[in-house]
Length: 349
Ligand code: GTP
Ligand code: MG
Ligand code: NA
Image (cartoon, rainbow, N blue to C red; front, side, top):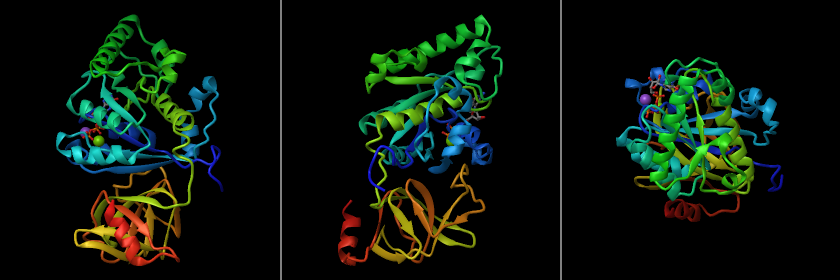
């Protein structure tokens, strides 16, 4: 089908922020999984990828949508998790380069921290539109849990003292953002002028544990994709793909996790990868993905595909993948292409 606003691909959403602000937990909440508790020391050390189907986005915004009446047109969402630990700024940089939109997660109890500011600067430098999640709102004194509820409904249930603590902390975050040159506001208090100013950042209080505000984050991301960056995510058949990770998997040998942004990858394709020793051409022997709403970096019952369509994270099986470099592009030799031309092109990026 043609390029049109009715034919959008899935946006790629990166989740960034300081260590332990709750990035992985927020994804666990949406996935209904427990990836974070399986991490060594509770620290994320790799880039992750999770695909959410449109029906999942619809189900998890249903309560909020009773008032918002918003039509989800994107076919799903691919979310890239990144580590917040200071030693992984290369992975944060890669994540911010790969994405269309982002969630910057701030711990409401701590405000802006060092890697929050680093992430913020990466997103601004790459002109990535983003929302700020003010996470751990459930830590406000005497917070009454309103499981998986839109944030404004949850705030209505709180006592005056809790609201006052919440207001003070949200204001602190806003002032700290202002010190970084970023104008922001609680998203439901933004005026029309703020929405039309592309540098103005919506703030969304969330709890990754009890789920308040998670509906709101998902809704804002869908709206951002459909209203702000729809031209940028029009589906297109030309392959655009990048290597996320290279790793050995029991029973599969060396595999390459590829982010297919646009276009198709097919079993049997002659794929061109960059390695430490120069370009290689290898036949794709297998294309595996985790089931929807499952993290790619966690071993699961992979689904086998003959063909995948971007945007999607996919595990590629083939020979000679040992020295493939993360962060490099992937190309395919088409019927009318010269192998040498494609090899030169893949290395030139
Ligand atoms: P890195 O990937 O290592 O940078 O951390 P992260 O940002 O992914 O944070 P993670 O999901 O590992 O959560 C860190 C800790 O905060 C865990 O102990 C979580 O249980 C806790 N946590 C995360 N979100 C919330 C929240 O909304 N409320 C509360 N009370 N605790 C939370
Ligand atoms: Mg994490
Ligand atoms: Na952590």
